[in-house]
Length: 357
Image (tube, rainbow, N blue to C red):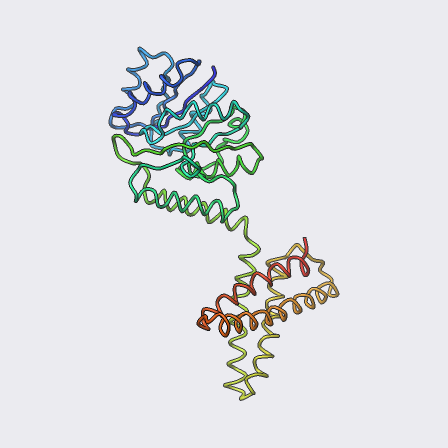
């Protein structure tokens, strides 16, 4: 068997026959099978496929007893597939079968996985505008928030070498729509060759969309989890910095308003106290495994952290002054930009010097 095409279905009775016909036309010169994984569709999709099997020997049906999620349907279809190359796609014609040969060609040219992409050159979307917004946002988040090279990370139109599925598609992957991103993340992290093939994503021909608001929440949750996993240190560093601001402000207020000390002296004490506070939290939490536990080592790190932080304070004042006085930017906006610059300086400086890997 050269090619297996896996199609999850739920209430796709109007689409399934023309879709199978179209796929068969695209693969007529190859040995192929089409595997429909149906999740107990109440509209009779499974019965329709069963009837079609009488005249189409290449068509296989996997019936499941309940709606268990598109991710688990794909995994089940992958286990059933006998082809050396496996294509996954939706049943609603949003993934036009005419692109199947392009995906197959990309794999046969050396790719481990070919992704039908809406966001590369010559790719496009023809579905309603309101259905384009969140996938486009997701694409940018995965690319720039997680630093992965694939532009269409949520695409459900792909072709795989069978070996990739045998290695990476286990039951630890999600059952829902976020399976698309989760499985591709794993594939990229494992070093497989992933290439994008431009497609024109089209509007569903018949039936109702299955993607719900809850699926959007799950996708967002999955991204958030991965973002925290991959960016835990800067997030922790920022959280510690926020507590340091609270410490600084509280001490400044107490010394100035309650003990009637000169505000600049109060500020100096508040700054140094918040620096020590931030160091202790970062040393114990953010960079817990990056330094020795001896008192001498801790004092050395404190000195380095103090130096980086005080230089950061100088950078803050300089950026604030230059942006306000010379660039004409409103001082509160200048202050926000200065804080961002100092955060980057403090994090990079401390990672490179105070807590080097």
